[in-house]
Length: 184
Image 1 (tube, one colour):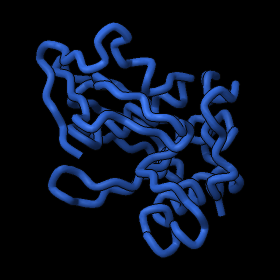
Image 2 (cartoon, helix red, strand yellow; image 1 turned 30 degrees about the horizontal axis):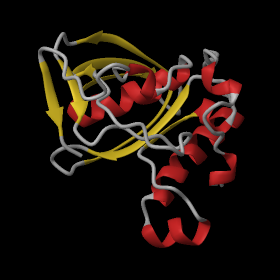
Image 3 (spheres, rainbow, N blue to C red; image 1 turned 90 degrees about the vertical axis):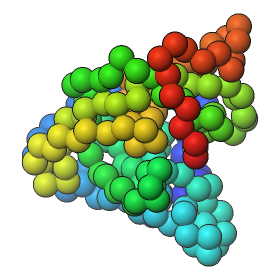
Protein backbone atom coordinates (compact mmCIF):
# COMPACT_ATOMS: atom_id res chain seq x y z
CA UNK A 1 0.00 0.00 0.00
CA UNK A 2 1.24 3.47 -0.90
CA UNK A 3 1.37 5.92 2.02
CA UNK A 4 2.23 9.60 2.40
CA UNK A 5 5.83 8.51 3.11
CA UNK A 6 6.06 7.17 -0.45
CA UNK A 7 5.09 10.52 -2.00
CA UNK A 8 8.10 12.66 -2.78
CA UNK A 9 7.99 16.39 -2.13
CA UNK A 10 8.47 19.47 -4.25
CA UNK A 11 12.16 20.00 -4.93
CA UNK A 12 12.90 16.29 -5.50
CA UNK A 13 14.66 15.94 -8.90
CA UNK A 14 12.33 13.16 -10.14
CA UNK A 15 9.44 15.65 -10.19
CA UNK A 16 11.26 17.71 -12.85
CA UNK A 17 12.20 14.80 -15.14
CA UNK A 18 10.34 13.74 -18.26
CA UNK A 19 9.05 10.25 -17.41
CA UNK A 20 9.75 7.20 -19.59
CA UNK A 21 7.08 5.48 -21.69
CA UNK A 22 5.83 2.19 -20.25
CA UNK A 23 6.36 -0.68 -22.69
CA UNK A 24 3.24 -2.56 -23.72
CA UNK A 25 1.92 -4.97 -22.73
CA UNK A 26 2.57 -3.69 -19.18
CA UNK A 27 4.61 -5.84 -16.80
CA UNK A 28 2.94 -7.36 -13.75
CA UNK A 29 5.07 -5.00 -11.62
CA UNK A 30 3.78 -1.93 -13.50
CA UNK A 31 0.18 -3.16 -13.26
CA UNK A 32 0.54 -3.69 -9.50
CA UNK A 33 2.15 -0.27 -9.00
CA UNK A 34 -0.55 1.54 -10.98
CA UNK A 35 -3.27 -0.41 -9.13
CA UNK A 36 -1.79 0.57 -5.78
CA UNK A 37 -1.58 4.24 -6.89
CA UNK A 38 -5.32 4.07 -7.57
CA UNK A 39 -5.95 2.35 -4.22
CA UNK A 40 -4.14 5.23 -2.49
CA UNK A 41 -6.62 7.71 -4.02
CA UNK A 42 -9.66 5.63 -3.06
CA UNK A 43 -8.34 5.14 0.50
CA UNK A 44 -7.38 8.82 0.83
CA UNK A 45 -10.99 9.83 0.11
CA UNK A 46 -12.41 7.53 2.79
CA UNK A 47 -12.27 9.61 6.02
CA UNK A 48 -11.76 6.60 8.33
CA UNK A 49 -9.03 4.98 6.22
CA UNK A 50 -7.36 8.34 5.57
CA UNK A 51 -7.23 9.10 9.29
CA UNK A 52 -6.03 5.61 10.23
CA UNK A 53 -3.14 5.68 7.73
CA UNK A 54 -2.52 9.46 7.81
CA UNK A 55 -3.32 9.87 4.09
CA UNK A 56 -3.73 13.28 2.51
CA UNK A 57 -6.79 13.26 0.25
CA UNK A 58 -5.99 13.19 -3.45
CA UNK A 59 -7.95 12.89 -6.68
CA UNK A 60 -5.01 12.13 -8.95
CA UNK A 61 -1.48 10.81 -8.71
CA UNK A 62 1.32 10.27 -11.22
CA UNK A 63 4.12 7.70 -10.88
CA UNK A 64 6.85 10.38 -10.65
CA UNK A 65 5.22 11.50 -7.38
CA UNK A 66 6.23 8.16 -5.85
CA UNK A 67 9.72 8.47 -7.35
CA UNK A 68 9.01 6.19 -10.33
CA UNK A 69 9.83 8.03 -13.54
CA UNK A 70 7.31 6.20 -15.73
CA UNK A 71 4.27 7.48 -17.65
CA UNK A 72 1.50 6.18 -15.37
CA UNK A 73 -1.39 8.07 -13.79
CA UNK A 74 -4.33 7.17 -11.57
CA UNK A 75 -7.40 9.35 -11.15
CA UNK A 76 -10.38 8.96 -8.81
CA UNK A 77 -12.48 12.12 -8.90
CA UNK A 78 -16.02 13.41 -9.15
CA UNK A 79 -17.08 15.72 -11.96
CA UNK A 80 -19.33 18.77 -11.71
CA UNK A 81 -22.41 16.50 -11.69
CA UNK A 82 -21.01 14.49 -8.76
CA UNK A 83 -20.38 11.48 -11.04
CA UNK A 84 -17.42 9.34 -9.96
CA UNK A 85 -14.66 8.77 -12.54
CA UNK A 86 -11.85 6.28 -12.00
CA UNK A 87 -8.88 5.72 -14.30
CA UNK A 88 -5.62 3.78 -14.23
CA UNK A 89 -3.67 4.64 -17.36
CA UNK A 90 -0.32 4.03 -18.98
CA UNK A 91 1.27 6.50 -21.42
CA UNK A 92 -1.54 9.09 -21.46
CA UNK A 93 -1.17 11.72 -24.13
CA UNK A 94 -3.30 14.76 -24.97
CA UNK A 95 -4.06 14.43 -28.69
CA UNK A 96 -6.35 17.46 -29.04
CA UNK A 97 -7.62 20.35 -26.95
CA UNK A 98 -9.96 23.32 -27.05
CA UNK A 99 -8.94 26.92 -27.57
CA UNK A 100 -11.10 27.80 -24.58
CA UNK A 101 -9.33 27.70 -21.23
CA UNK A 102 -10.63 26.72 -17.79
CA UNK A 103 -9.35 27.21 -14.26
CA UNK A 104 -10.35 26.07 -10.79
CA UNK A 105 -11.69 29.00 -8.80
CA UNK A 106 -10.14 27.47 -5.66
CA UNK A 107 -6.75 27.04 -7.33
CA UNK A 108 -4.93 23.72 -7.56
CA UNK A 109 -3.14 21.66 -4.96
CA UNK A 110 -0.82 18.68 -5.18
CA UNK A 111 0.10 15.70 -3.00
CA UNK A 112 3.78 16.56 -3.60
CA UNK A 113 3.40 20.24 -2.66
CA UNK A 114 2.94 21.08 1.02
CA UNK A 115 2.68 24.85 0.71
CA UNK A 116 -0.18 26.78 -0.84
CA UNK A 117 0.38 28.52 -4.18
CA UNK A 118 -2.46 31.02 -4.52
CA UNK A 119 -3.59 31.84 -8.03
CA UNK A 120 -5.38 30.50 -11.06
CA UNK A 121 -3.88 27.70 -13.17
CA UNK A 122 -5.09 28.11 -16.75
CA UNK A 123 -5.78 24.79 -18.48
CA UNK A 124 -7.65 23.72 -21.61
CA UNK A 125 -11.38 23.40 -20.90
CA UNK A 126 -11.70 20.31 -23.14
CA UNK A 127 -9.13 17.68 -24.06
CA UNK A 128 -8.98 14.33 -25.79
CA UNK A 129 -6.58 11.83 -24.24
CA UNK A 130 -5.26 8.58 -25.69
CA UNK A 131 -3.77 6.04 -23.28
CA UNK A 132 -3.46 2.35 -22.50
CA UNK A 133 -5.50 0.69 -19.74
CA UNK A 134 -4.34 -1.97 -17.25
CA UNK A 135 -4.85 -4.69 -19.89
CA UNK A 136 -2.72 -2.79 -22.42
CA UNK A 137 -5.75 -1.84 -24.55
CA UNK A 138 -5.95 1.63 -26.09
CA UNK A 139 -8.55 4.00 -24.67
CA UNK A 140 -9.60 7.40 -25.96
CA UNK A 141 -11.26 9.83 -23.55
CA UNK A 142 -12.99 13.13 -24.24
CA UNK A 143 -12.85 15.20 -21.08
CA UNK A 144 -14.11 18.61 -20.02
CA UNK A 145 -14.28 20.80 -16.93
CA UNK A 146 -12.83 19.37 -13.72
CA UNK A 147 -11.87 16.05 -15.34
CA UNK A 148 -9.91 17.83 -18.09
CA UNK A 149 -8.12 19.89 -15.42
CA UNK A 150 -7.22 16.83 -13.31
CA UNK A 151 -5.86 14.97 -16.34
CA UNK A 152 -3.74 17.95 -17.41
CA UNK A 153 -2.34 18.27 -13.87
CA UNK A 154 -1.31 14.59 -13.81
CA UNK A 155 0.04 14.53 -17.38
CA UNK A 156 2.12 17.62 -16.49
CA UNK A 157 3.80 15.49 -13.78
CA UNK A 158 4.89 13.07 -16.51
CA UNK A 159 6.59 15.98 -18.28
CA UNK A 160 8.33 17.44 -15.22
CA UNK A 161 5.89 20.35 -14.93
CA UNK A 162 4.34 21.48 -11.63
CA UNK A 163 0.92 23.19 -11.45
CA UNK A 164 2.37 26.44 -10.08
CA UNK A 165 4.53 26.79 -13.22
CA UNK A 166 1.31 27.87 -14.98
CA UNK A 167 0.35 30.61 -12.49
CA UNK A 168 0.95 34.12 -13.81
CA UNK A 169 3.89 35.40 -11.70
CA UNK A 170 2.95 39.10 -12.00
CA UNK A 171 -0.80 38.62 -11.52
CA UNK A 172 -1.63 35.22 -9.92
CA UNK A 173 -5.38 35.76 -10.31
CA UNK A 174 -5.17 36.77 -13.96
CA UNK A 175 -8.03 35.27 -15.98
CA UNK A 176 -7.03 34.56 -19.59
CA UNK A 177 -9.42 35.58 -22.40
CA UNK A 178 -11.91 32.88 -23.44
CA UNK A 179 -11.75 31.00 -20.17
CA UNK A 180 -14.36 29.51 -17.87
CA UNK A 181 -14.33 29.23 -14.10
CA UNK A 182 -14.74 25.73 -12.69
CA UNK A 183 -15.96 25.30 -9.11
CA UNK A 184 -14.59 22.48 -6.98
